[in-house]
Image (cartoon, rainbow, N blue to C red; front, side, top):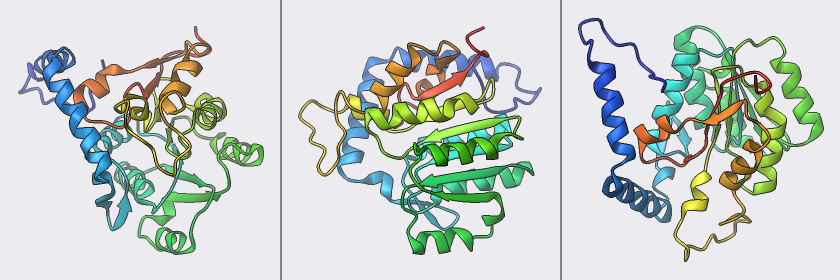
Length: 255
């Protein structure tokens, strides 16, 4: 289990208490059910569309924003790769933590970067840490560009949050997970699509049960033992769009 903060020497029991508390959360069926119910209600009401980060709208659950901050601050990557830009809030979130760390860049990839969003991102005070790449995240030329950008990076985190169909996410994992450094993460968002109620209908979306990021993760992990699902993160968060989606690189080539 990984902890994402430094514990002062004056609090020697903090880590042990936290570990026990999170373990209790993982076994608390009532609390888990309430969290899942709340997440469903939040999606139905577009709750996650209400936030912003340093002035740019961000379409994420608050607990996932917390997890992103913890991961970047702890790993201190040279490069953050994000697929799916929308309004740019997630890019600004990553860039803001990198700015505090004092190094690193964010590559943002989207098939359609709208002019007003591009203008806002490129004119944001943190724009110097952001590189925008327009095109499909699974287009071979885009993948090659990202790999070229990543060559000099020793520590890399990947966040996948674009098209949520099984085939697309599987292609993204095949394209980008290999860039993740050991002890870093590939986070696959919106895996919770698989966990929505049976009667939930996705309108104007090509994904749903059996065809979503979680099913792609499950298939991909069958042939990639060098990655594991870090359940300790979702056990802490409880409310996350990425159950089974926090993938930690634990070894090189399965060794």
